[in-house]
Image 1 (cartoon, rainbow, N blue to C red):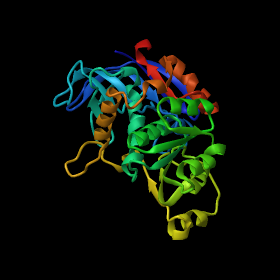
Image 2: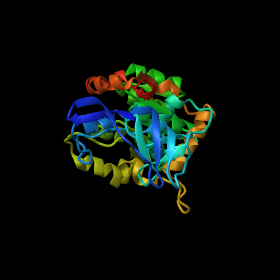
Image 3: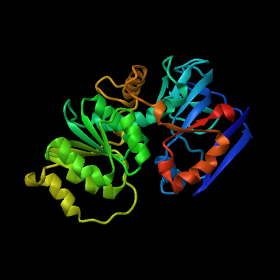
Image 4: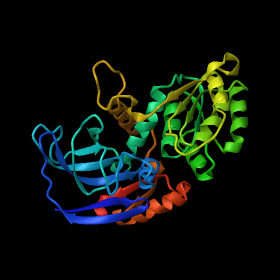
Length: 335
């Protein structure tokens, strides 16, 4: 078969390859044809920059896909013709199987397949909700309304919180309010919004979704007494500050005794386990159900649908202006 794939050749060098290959599924594996894949602007750009030691170039990037099973090996969990959601690559054909770092689940009928790859971003956002103490009536601030931040805000809202979204881009603030976020403001307006909506008490929970260390420090001032700040975005980049100020906010009662929590997706199991309530698999199925019920909005977050050939150029444009993009889907039917 003629396979086509996107390759990160070297830092900031992206190519589109076509090659003849033979792929045969082994035990537990499935040969799949990718229908749609999602570009992750955070992780994939970090890989393309050369800043992720685990990603050794040249290599095929990728985050999540919706694919059709073409051939199932012995003991494979799904059969030929099934549509699956999995953590796959930007490649038209590939082998996949479930393991501790690769979720593979069947896509329920009736869902919009083009937007389903974004469910992975929803489950990444879901981790911030699972580790939090968010309850009905709380006020939650989400810093950064990109794909993950928007979904964290939606999920906090579905949990019963009043949500303040903060982002410098007007288009992202407008979209956040369109999908049901209570209040979306610029960084300059954030303090006033917190004061107004909490009557000066500060937020119960702040979710930092940008990964910008300076934003995390600013967000501490929005947390109320005995509140929590959750690091959802992976911190990247150098930043100098007086760490004592940060630590004193968590240590001293008179400064709020704020709890800091990490919400990296891999802190919970990938597949369901008997003695653990939460897993990425369960969060995925909850997201599917909320989409079906019209409560979790993904289709509205698709900003671009690309052919694989167009993707190489878009990676470089993303590095110049991420605010111009949100949900970027690659349509492999056009490969």
